Length: 115
Image (cartoon, rainbow, N blue to C red; front, top):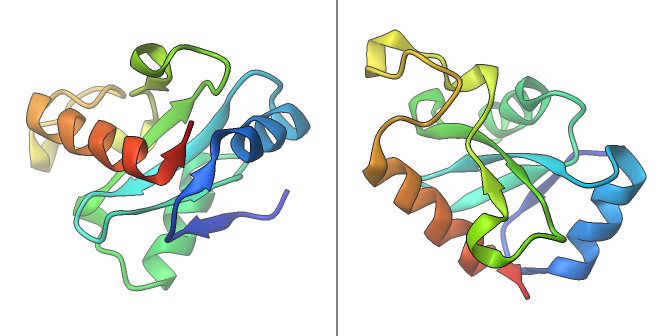
């Protein structure tokens, strides 16, 4: 599947179709919390991360998530990715440990995904 950089809102139904075509019930995404954009459709979060880096994003602003389009909005985002492991930023696990960053990610996803 082609990785897409999402710069403007996208319908949830389109994300659900992308998820179905790839992993079934979820799709991987990388969110740039500074530029307020995200990439969707990579087999690995690192694929999406690489595309965003080529597009002038900075690595410290990129966070990997999974989106489950069939879940209720408050259960749609999972903060789990190998790209999130970055001890230099005090994030020592695959999860996004900083609650402020999680809130930024959720806000961007809610703005970019039209239910």
